[in-house]
Length: 112
Image (cartoon, rainbow, N blue to C red; front, top):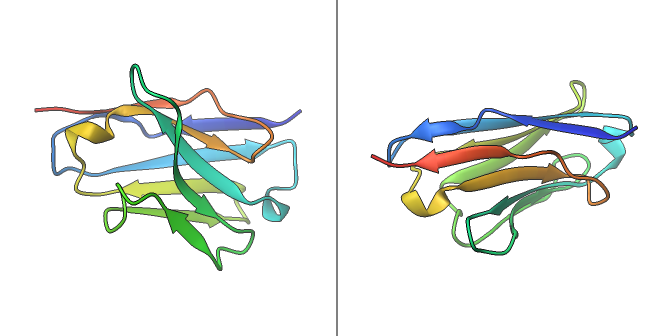
């Protein structure tokens, strides 16, 4: 049974940082490209970041380039999203996916 469990969300002030984690189980994590998506209220879910199997290639949405970093630890079956210089428009529920299953999401709120 595939499980993706996100954690690390919360309330942060503009300019602050958060590190999201996604613990994966039930599939071969090291063989799966992974992505982070986010969905803000009233908006469609959008791709934030993508990473290949061995982390050789990553892709970030234009809105987060230079501020977010996606990484993975295949030994720990864990995906990460380091988010720096957070802005109010980054407020959303953040989801990880192996492109077949989704986690339950973790709320990120950027507000003063």
